[in-house]
Image (cartoon, rainbow, N blue to C red; front, side, top):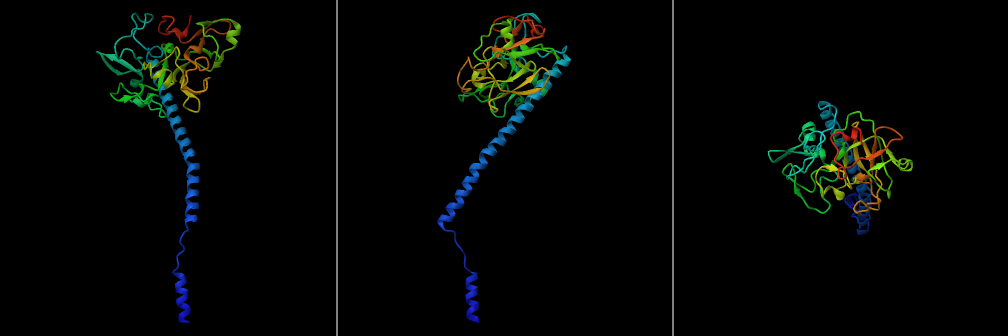
Length: 299
């Protein structure tokens, strides 16, 4: 009897060790699970960043609307003018080269512009959390907040949207890829080819490569493009304060300069008088000297 108890107790003390093959199988299963989970976690993080980016644009919409309600219902100016409101824009000096929504020069020093007065002096309000104001080549410059970033802002303003009236009911559209972009569209076939948008964009999530890191002025115009960092799309805020994820026409890659395939500011047209009247290119700063509020009655 004692011998049997001794045998039973001996059996109870036995421990089963994993073999090398079993350990490798467990490690393999864990590795597979991690490989499946990491993309999902990364995607969730990007979704969260996209939500923050969209919220930034909503705050920008509130800011320019708040400014307009104090200044004759018009969106803030982008620069001083020689004669207000129709004189030429006055640029010059290190900080005067930036749009006034972003930076205003006082006594030769750059100070936060209109946006930061109405949305709080928080630099991240103009920063996409997916890009964090980085350049594509790793270069940095000193920004208005005395820090080092690749670009001043990830979001920029349509140049000719300055002075736009709240409640502006504009017809807006853009020409398809590989289409000519004259200053005025008035032929029926030209107008009919336009791809319509819901309203006038005021701020745009600009492509860093084309050309935010080259021209860090806070303005969107001419050959500037829209970022496609959010699943081939970028955020825009319209004159009514609403935010949209805009998926522009583009070529094979945002990093390639494909001017005939990529959507540019020059592709955007506006009309406020209805069908049968001319459509004007919305970005005309380089071809005409237009006054503050031109967008309300383009001509």
